[in-house]
Length: 213
Image (cartoon, one colour):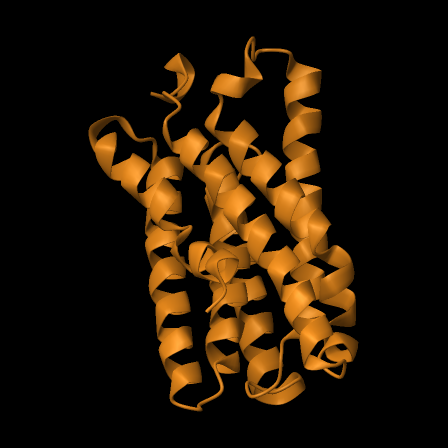
């Protein structure tokens, strides 16, 4: 296995370890990201094992995208960025999850890559990150953004989802390319995963704002 891919598979360990070191003072949002990091780590590990056994890991890819999109939306609600009402946020997360399940079962199929849902996720996550930066700019209550948990999460979003947006829209075409070309593209994605998890790890080390304590 290429060292970059191996590092990307273990990258969720970075925010997970930092979170465990600061467990007592984590905000609810940071705890959600900690659980997500554990899920990403286990999901990727099982995916590698299935691949080694000659079994497609696309069902786990569908699961990854569904959980990532719905739970990250809830994380931003907890941190006060998105919708005001808890019922509305739960409703939005539920709709996203159901859309992903429907896509896996009746749309693209769980044995095929979730290219359409992946493109929708990338677009949505970029918009959520931009919403955070716009909200922070308008309210002007954050003095040092580099000490904000959501700053690093949003930066991670932009690094990964903006960096892989084109890949998300063209994944079906890329799968048809030669193995070496596909591998090179995947290495870029692996590098972005590492950078994103570094951002998450830095965010985990940030202390809660007084108004969020």
